[in-house]
Amino acid sequence: QVQLVESGGGLVQAGGSLRLSCAASGRPFSRYGMGWFRQAPGKEREFVATISWSGGGTYYADSVKGRFTVSRDNAKNTVYLQMNSLKPEDTAVYYCAARRSPVATTRRDDYDYWGRGTQVTVSS
Image (cartoon, rainbow, N blue to C red; front, side, top):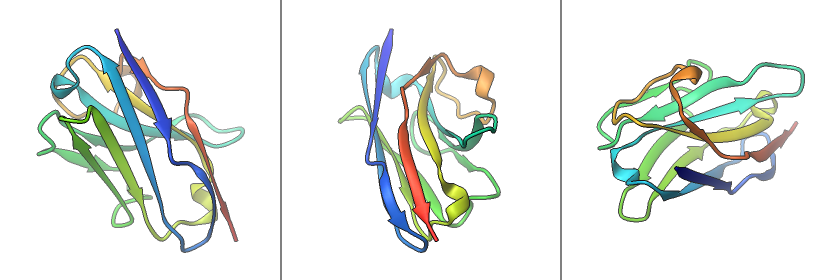
């Protein structure tokens, strides 16, 4: 079992930055592919970013490419999402997810564990 706890969300003005963290406990974190998803009110949960176990493979949704950066520190059992140039449409609850495979994936159903989420609100 893996427990995931997100932090770092908050209220920020458009154009600002936030850094989300996801702390993992339980099984060997370093062998897990990790992902970030988000869900806005009235919308389905959507893919944001993913990273392989080594950090060598990363993929992003088109809507965040060039603005968000996913990274991980396996020694600290933590994955990060650096969000720059934030827009009001980035407002959502952001979720961290882990899968029992070292490979990164954009598919929501491929993830086995989920955190409870952290709210990000971007004001215009």
